[in-house]
Image (cartoon, rainbow, N blue to C red):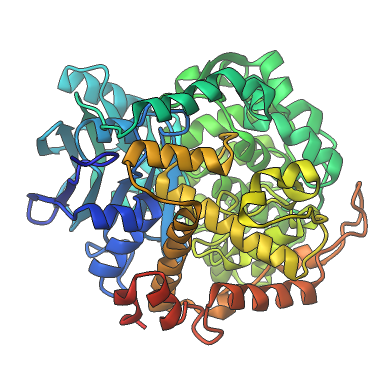
Length: 622
């Protein structure tokens, strides 16, 4: 009997209407685990090189992990992947809530979608029953309406829905996949892939469960989290959400402000998680099996009609639509977040693309003639909200911004590309490398473009207490935030490999688990005799496959660059004068390549490394 997986992957060809089942076996699941590993496997195996990411040939993968749906906190996540319309490389994003667990309850370990429907369709999965149904009546509808319509149409209010949104229909290159109306697989533009395939939604209802090998062992971890999370930093998440740390970042000089020109924001106190809790918070929500309840539910009835149906803004959304755009109106930010969830937009790329346009406008590189009359100055709340609407529907100046800041800048010219805060075409998240030097290394080398979730945050490892959780990997001394020597590069490699493992397991990264507890969960769920060494190799393997995919799609080491802005000093604030030396970053990237066994000509792992990772079949692609 299998544990942690059902040995069933659903295959759907939208061009032909064919529906099939693949049973890859235990070796597959123990090698790739799910998430990133599963996504990279199918992209390398089945997607023709240099395919159009918005074409019928793109392969869209919905990939829970082996612990998704297990009765323990942090197991509610799943991943989505395809060739990214935003970067042209490896595209993957993770999402919480309940959709992934429901797919496992229905008896499926993943979905591989190929082809392109002639007209809008949705996929209905009820246990073993799978149907492709017409979705013309859903096309053009907002996410909450789609969710409600499908539940009414299918006669079941407990159905879980993942959908592409109106932005995905309009092929916005950073459209996301929205689950449960208010959870987003936000990055790399996977909603646009759904839209291009005319796959409006996937509605899932399951009546089973994922069998667990050792119930007692999993229960022990679940009960530890329930009883002890308030003794950890997770208490801040419960009380004030992911936005609880905004004021600390601001005080440290690391809050992205006015398109990363500054690291502190004069209006920071107005947009903190604490302020949200005291003003517009009306409830807390959670993900499958999790006691932390960090999800915000907000409401406003004044100038902006904000409804708790769409949840509430997380830190990334608050900073991207707020300080990065010079806006300190929390209700307006919450409304902007609601619009992004309504239409299916990544709040990070949306906010940073708008902030780029604002900086260009203030520098005179854009004029009202370019923007359709909009005065795109920092702090212009009305302009920010107008652009979200325009981007989602590709109207006015928003049509150009829907391409992302890099493509938009290259169309405009006039030196605007210089101020596009992106790496590999993906906009940089709300974390500032000038207070976390190794973050710049992670941004530069990430296969998905700039990303914070599988990256290192140096400030976590500057104290003896901070490194306690990573001692089992051989990291024995804390390191300062502004150091980029060999010891920090080694720490970065180990940390990122572990984070990518979490993206294969589809475990929430906000869990205060020790690494040994993660091992307990994996062993307890799967029954496998795995070790921390094996878990680290799962992450390293998935990263290696993503790098090979990028090499195959034309990305090179020249794409692994840190943004110039982070090597210029802050001109004000707590970190005035601080910069990440460009030479230090270049040396760190070179050393990181060596530690990962990446070839300095291709950017991909060497054939020897691929064989060492047990994926010799990938070496043939080099």
